[in-house]
Structure formats: structure tokens, C-alpha cells
Length: 331
View 1 (cartoon, rainbow, N blue to C red):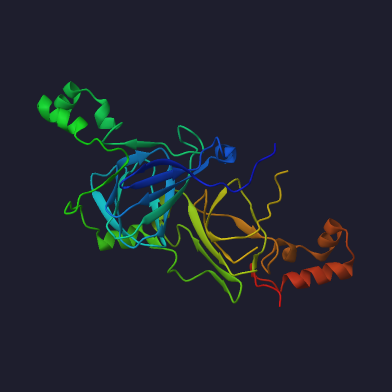
View 2 (view 1 turned 135 degrees about the vertical axis):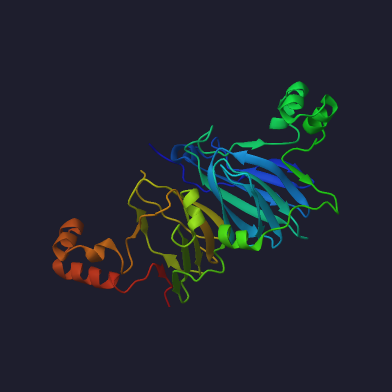
């Protein structure tokens, strides 16, 4: 089977005064459906408010832009709302079944990209959202009689609950409308700023790599995903890697241009990308640095596998030992 691995731009699904939402659809990018991963992007204007909702997928939100974001969550099997502060570089897991709302309390755009695993989704490869209130919401779908009995209110109040909010998905809150304030302790526990973290790999003129797993950030364990931020300097190269299990890596290019080579499924001005891997314990191996499996294999196996002389095999193995996973440009 041939796969189209061409990078795709997101399609705008909704736009209003409060902001917009973009999605990568399986009709445009069938590989998302095949690999059961999905992606979306939320853009909130100042005072923009994404109405409370839940989704059919576990995902990770990565803040691309903004310094005064707020997210409120009610995690599964809890009856408590946690309110968190968000800024550029923050990683926030969104657990399957959790109800969340998102608010831009700043003066410039708040932009968050969501990458997630969709094996349990209604549409594999896409996130489906269920809005609690507003037009086309769960509340609006119930009859006034049902709402009246369920919430112990009269029918006039039931109509208010179901129909007062005419906005959909994202609205703009009026000045003076106040929401719950973020809690610093919960933010420190449930949000991780990957931009501020000490890189796992830092190569002069090559770039840096910061990996994020459950070991560093325990809350990631609830979404069973891991993440990685890579920043390549201009004309630098990342050595080849491979995944030893069936997990999938989904990458969002934050900025820059590059050339990517992918083998195994019959530029520029530097690059920055954020990616997720669909496991909480990623098993990634390197092919070209001093950690390469080629370096571990015995010389005879290398000779036979590549059909080269012993002298060439020794040279090949010695050169591998000199490389790092990020390779600076040649002089």
C-alpha cells in the first residue's frame, strides 16, 4: 500500500468573533485514518472563549503563541474543576472524557495545536467534540420537559438553560465578565513548559532535542502519549531514527523549512517542530550517531549486511562513533 506523506495545511472548520478552529481531515490526509492519529488547532482572539466540551480522543495541547491563556478542566471520575495558566511553550495533556474550556485573557492571539491518538474515536484520524452548552449543544438537544425534571427547574428556566446561549464552539466574552482564576499549584502539576526545560541533546550549531515522557511529567501517563521538541539550526541535520514498536509519530512544524526523508513505506533556514508519539514509553532508536545499532553490531555482521570489506566496515563503524544525533552543517 502506498501512503501520501506530503505535509498538509489544516482546514478552517469554524470562525467567529472569539476565534477559530482548524482541523486536518482524513479526506485530505487519509494516512491519519490509517495510523489513528489526529490534529487540530485552536486560535483564540483576546477574550475568546471555547465553550465547555469533551472529545472522543486523548491528546496533547502545545501552546504556539500567547502568554495569558487559561484552561479549565474537569477530569474523568472527578467533580472538581482545575483551572490552569498557559503560555507559549506549555504542554498540557487533555485526557479522554475530560470536559474542558479555553480562554484567552491576554491582548494578543492564543494559538494551541492539539496532537492525539484516535483509535477510540468515532472517526479514526479526527477529533469529534461534544459541546455542553450553546447552539448545536448537548443541552440544546434535550426537550424543555426533560431539562425541567433533570435539573429541577420550571419550563421557562429550562428554556433558558437550553437556548440562551446562541453561540457555537467559540464565543467572545464581554469585558468585565470574569472566569475562575488559574491555580498555581495545579498549573505546576498539570502543565509542563517544554521550551524552558533543559534539552536532552544540545549540539553547537546543530540544535537541540527535548523529550517529554511520563518519567519527567507524570500527568502524561493519563493520555498514554509522549512528546518531543526539536530545534534544528540552519543547514544542520538530524540523524535517522526508527521506532521499534507499532507506535506512530505525528509531527507539527512550528516554523522554518526543511527536507525530510522517510524510508520504509514503499533547505532552508532551520526548523522547529513539535511531535507526539502514541505511547507513554517511546522506543526510538538511532541509526547514525554513536548510539546507532550499526555501532553495536559486530564487524562481521556489518560486512555481510552491507557487502563491504573489513577495512571499509571498520571505517564505517569508527565514523559512526564520531557523530551525534544532531549534525551541524559542514564547514
